[in-house]
Image (tube, rainbow, N blue to C red):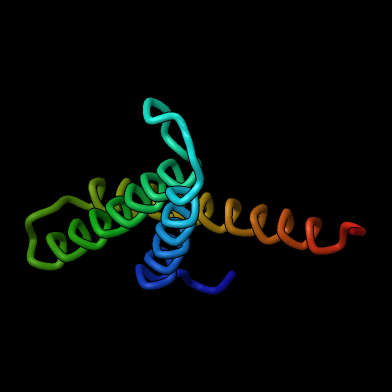
Length: 103
């Protein structure tokens, strides 16, 4: 599996933000969060988790974090990246299914 960078996760966040702008054009109930809102929040959380992992790794390099902290942060970041990839793959699969539908 190729490594996923913060830039790639940020790209997913940007796509979610575009979905939000499209969703905001459609009428909706003001009390409910849209799908775009949920995707934007999830992407923001994923970026924050990876950034936290990087900060912990940097702290370990200067002796401010333990090996256990680094290991936990790296495992957390890996799980976050795997989740982002799984969601991306499902979105692509759903899009392809919609494209294949007869009109």
